[in-house]
Length: 469
Ligand code: HEC
Ligand code: HEC
Ligand code: HEC
Ligand code: HEC
Image 1 (cartoon, protein in one colour):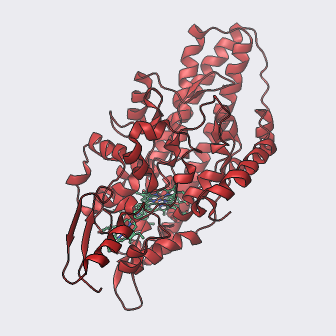
Image 2 (cartoon, protein in one colour; image 1 turned 135 degrees about the horizontal axis):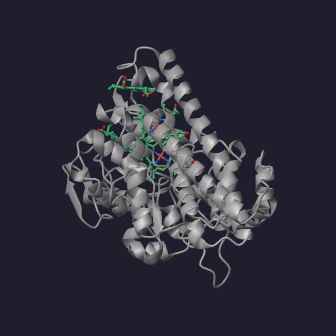
């Protein structure tokens, strides 16, 4: 590949190590300008030329356009997430190429705040783009997080890209996000001490993990693993800090929200035990036209790669498909059961408050709702749980069912004491009906969002923010 140049740009290119034989100084300066520029995928021709197979397969994540409307699939979740932006819009994930545009367009991230309002933290960019670690370095972690999501929008120029996982200009794996480095150390898997397989899983685990924004610290992203990464460990962390994301408008429960804990579930799976990682299943080895092997960077669904990724250990695709379908059905059935119980519990708690219940009596059932919904969410928001760790999924949901039943049992006692004989539950059989039940008018949100997209995003933001729209 022409002159032998090995450029190791670690910290934004200020510490540069170069070995060169035949390149002129001028050519070197050009190369540096490319590798140190602000990680703009579009203008980054060096990686494109140096690693064409990886680059082209990375680009192909743009082909993965399908996604599902989870609120339409599971309208009950609108009631459970009432009072938060999750009740507005929630889709299943799709290709990495859509990461920036989807978070820009979702109703969840809303519109710029009015003067004097705080708005959404820029922390929402952290898991979408290599511009996030760049801005964190520029502004400091708290400086970055204290900014507004929409204010930093114009700075975002790339979707998930090479420098999210590799030291710039090389194939060496890295974790550019400081909070992810810390998190791996918390669970005694410091990144620098791991083999390439675990490091591969950890680069995914920068983003495919659960997190929260620290309210007392300018909303910096934190991965809450001090006690460990199980639902119990994280719940203990939140409970001891008396942390909550929002107060549920019906039941007054201080709610915890889980977010895509794929890394956590995988890390305790049978596959992890035998060294099968995210990379094995989602980035299989492929051959180019000349027979050269490379890692597919078209990070996508796993099953279509059965022959490459699975057949070394599993002989029958049909058997695996049957097993996966059975796991999925069990988990989905249990999740729906929790939803029915929790919706009732939220309305029963509301009925109790309306009839004059006191905190001293309500504390216990409210905590049971909090803990049940946390486990349901830790399962529900983990995409591919039925494939990653079905055993843990079933355990989480069984416990959630138990805790929701406990909440309802306690509430039944309180309602009886208060002489409440009837509680009415709304019709939530569709997304529209569930929205109506919590007084959310989707069309207003869409109108407001479209205006912001037309007036600002379409005019002033980078094309990455419009990709696919
Ligand atoms: C989401 C994380 C991620 C992104 C983004 C990413 N890579 Fe990789 N890359 C990996 C992993 C994981 C491996 C496999 C490491 C191993 O097993 O040795 C890898 C391997 C490689 C290799 C080694 C050869 C091979 O094919 O295994 C090269 C070269 C490479 N990547 C280049 C790139 C380039 C260029 C980009 C941007 C267009 C990029 N990568 C984007 C995670 C990523
Ligand atoms: C910088 C953050 C980030 C990193 C690193 C990252 N992802 Fe993602 N990933 C995302 C986001 C965000 C989405 C959802 C994009 C959307 O729906 O717009 C996503 C989507 C996906 C999907 C769904 C794809 C589809 O077509 O349905 C898979 C699978 C996936 N990621 C696996 C991985 C694996 C495996 C790794 C590690 C090699 C990884 N991701 C690394 C942020 C990241
Ligand atoms: C044993 C193989 C295997 C391993 C290991 C694995 N996955 Fe998956 N993953 C799957 C399968 C199977 C699915 C279900 C859908 C599909 O990909 O066919 C899935 C689904 C997903 C999805 C949801 C895709 C969507 O569009 O709904 C994401 C995101 C994901 N995995 C990320 C990861 C991450 C991150 C890791 C590592 C921490 C990981 N996976 C480890 C096999 C695996
Ligand atoms: C390195 C070997 C290896 C590879 C590669 C591998 N698996 Fe597995 N898989 C295992 C082992 C070991 C088990 C556990 C077997 C058991 O407990 O009986 C397992 C179990 C499973 C199960 C049953 C899980 C359960 O408990 O219900 C499914 C489904 C599965 N694998 C799917 C896949 C898929 C899909 C792929 C490829 C994308 C894959 N595996 C790749 C080794 C592997």
